Length: 170
Image (cartoon, rainbow, N blue to C red; front, side, top):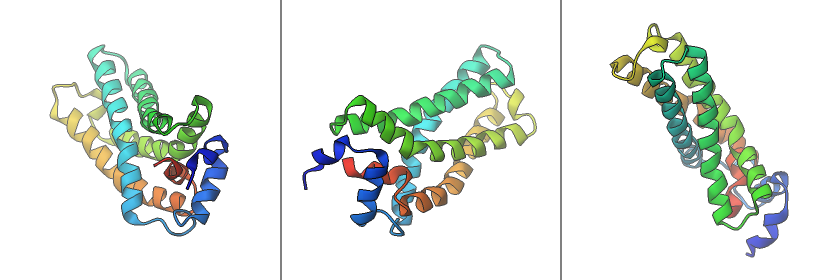
């Protein structure tokens, strides 16, 4: 099948294509959802760890550090998808639309869960890079975010949303 015809459509067009090609409505497997979530989590983790490390090393306040970490999580999370679909031949505008459609909900849920855990864990917001509490809370938050976000991605992919829009380019 010639996928070049799909490269000029909208994210909705791609999701609709996936629904009709067997990757969409109601057919998302747990494996597909887990892979999508791990893909998203990798970008989020890189960005968030970098942001937390920078903010902590610069002795920024908790709010500034968390804002930087969340911003970098979204940037790195989107960039993984953006560069993958660019390599598949999409122009920049279309690639940005696909990345936003594929990753926004997944990253948002992941960040909400992970940062909520960090904020609610006593002492975690004040932990330093050399403290085990810093790393265990951050990594534990990622693990819990993975467990919570995978069903969200399964539901979205099953409806032709989220990472389903990326499948046309793999």
